[in-house]
Length: 223
Image 1 (cartoon, rainbow, N blue to C red):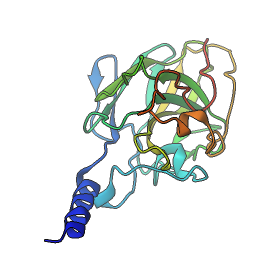
Image 2 (cartoon, rainbow, N blue to C red):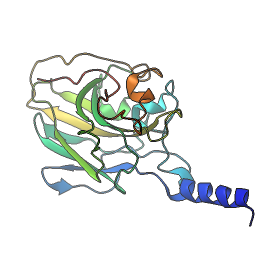
Image 3 (cartoon, rainbow, N blue to C red):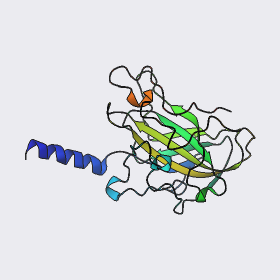
Image 4 (cartoon, one colour):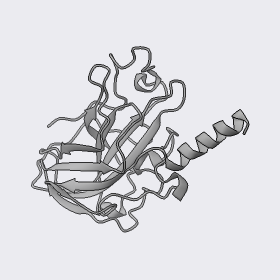
């Protein structure tokens, strides 16, 4: 077999089985079935867990096919509750993980994420080490108003300096009760929140880029 054929075969194998996806949601120690409260993407079966790389794409909101609910259920939670996103396999492309939310004007099942978003948590590097895990746990902000929201998790693969960053994204549908009255800020649109020249995209992590790394996007909102 020629060398070029070997390379092509390796790339094809990676494309068929590579990457990872946030496909499961949990609350209070309970792990819910696959895709019950997480919008399922509609990538082709051979690329079901492929990343989004176009910074101008609406797929950056909730992944390919995530603009519609497609039967996803909405989970009622209390403000301040702990939640977890689970992956099919642990993250292995280095880069930060972030959490965003967007309040639906009505039912979140009818919402395409075209409104405003706020970020409320980042997992950046600790020194040169990255938080590469098979689940990510945080808490719903206690002070935000009741209502129905898209809860978005984003992991950014920046393992190929000079190439477009890879967004691994999923959105859960939640309804918040017992909330507060604080309006989160800053607010951003997706797409629009991420720029190609953001330092977090252009950092070369193999040349000391992790030590002073700045996570892309707005500053996280804190109650």
